[in-house]
Length: 338
Image (tube, rainbow, N blue to C red; front, side, top):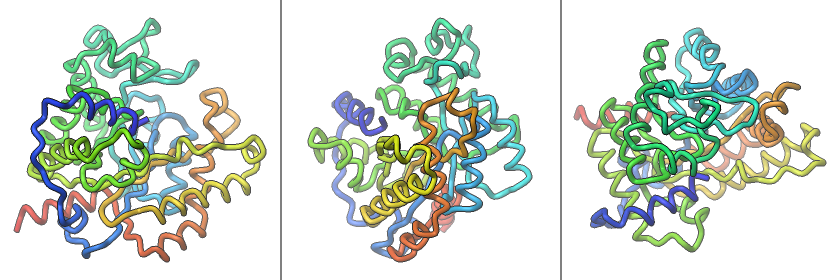
């Protein structure tokens, strides 16, 4: 999803002047990691979406190798997770800025209110099901009002996010949307998830339609974020939601764990030097989750893989340095102070 939206973004950003050259050093090196280091944020999306989502994220972080997560502020199980964070300080949690409500029987609306942002809601008064519908109906100003409302709610609850990212990649869908996204991060001095270094995995995932010139446009945005005092990703691994789950393994935790662990180990082996974020959707599925979504097996598999000792060993064997958004922000701040 994010790769497809980035391609759309690239093709619609011809107005940007691209003068940057390929950087000799990665953003990881600029942040003080040794040259050639593979630095990884293992990140859980969709926290707060449901009870099962919360439990899966907690398991992946406290019993597994995941290092970070992000919270969907319009969703019903946010208060429970924020309470957990207050009881367990130090969890690296950002905002999964949410402009869609994709399921049919389990939905949420904008925090900004449908009278304030009518272009964000469908006939049920919920956020649109798809990214395309958001693009077709919502203005950039409405998008900005909503993402600001989501940050405001977090702060009202005593939750200061470590970073921003974007649910279903919606904020990558148009140049105007991405401008609002980057603006929110810079104004609040909060890092923004955006792969703007060598982008090796993104280029591979997006296929032959992506040229180096298009990637350079993304790098220009990265340079803007870096100049504003924020850390920047070199790359993004975002393929796990598309890994097919067979019927045979869907109800067999052992087979599901083995399959997903193998796929994540392959992902670890594919990493290039630099700061990369690897996205997953860890969920401790109960009998309720199938009534929300049919994606339960792939989400449960993510959680099981994160808790698999084989994945931890692979990370160690590959010499991967695990980090968080909080740590990379602190490293960037130290550079500014020297």
